[in-house]
Length: 89
Image 1 (cartoon, rainbow, N blue to C red):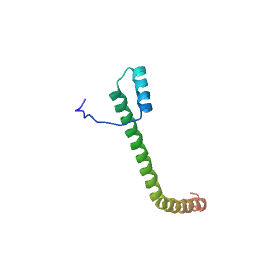
Image 2 (cartoon, one colour; image 1 turned 180 degrees about the vertical axis):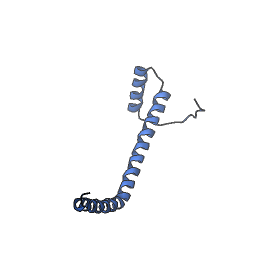
Image 3 (cartoon, one colour; image 1 turned 90 degrees about the horizontal axis):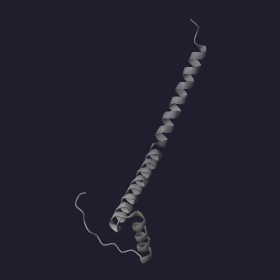
Image 4 (spheres, rainbow, N blue to C red; image 1 turned 120 degrees about the vertical axis):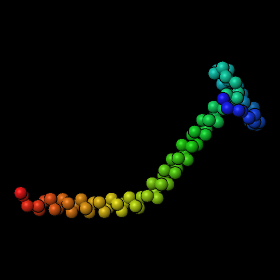
């Protein structure tokens, strides 16, 4: 494991009691539980940020995509009309 830093975190007695209960059940120490909780939170938060960025990107691209789709629909209709009236060979 890379070098570690010691930090001081203030939490309520109730929350500490819950953490201590988990340490007994999981046979792990507080540091491991807190470290995993921080990792879990950071991963969840990164996913939320990525999802928001994707939503923003899709919304920004929506007018462009609509224009492209509308233009393509016109071309497809022209091809269908051309194919219907094309003389048989």
